[in-house]
Length: 193
Image (cartoon, rainbow, N blue to C red; front, side):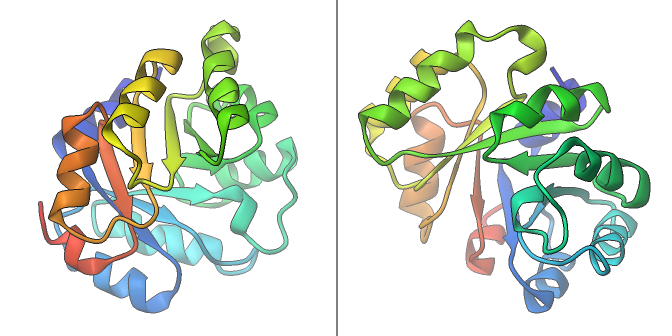
């Protein structure tokens, strides 16, 4: 378990998720401590993460969304060795152990669409410790309170709610029902810290 990453989430439970340069520049002016990078390519990702790190923030890169990187262990190596990323988000559970081996925070993103997604959440606790993510990010983040509680019980892992978070009510719903943090692309949410 990446204790340093979890401590930062607890200290600063709002995560800025950025999709473009405008979001990058906006998040650098906020008090958020963790930034989820949801854009870029193999040529630009180093510069993006370096700007975030230089501002004293923790860059976490969504591997699946970076153009030119495959969803393989070599891409994890690249992000570890050639960027300032301190964590990786992926929808590929097969990459979690590799991410953790590199000493990076491992965030598994799961889309809660139906009962099959809930079954996937339940299977996480039956995996070996090395294969379990440090944190699960579930989307959409505006799930009903009982669904958030159910996910926390099934997975018994820290939970981030992301996607469609649009106001204080959404933030409080997630945090009051078991999420350790929320991630949002909306700069007005970042200002709630």
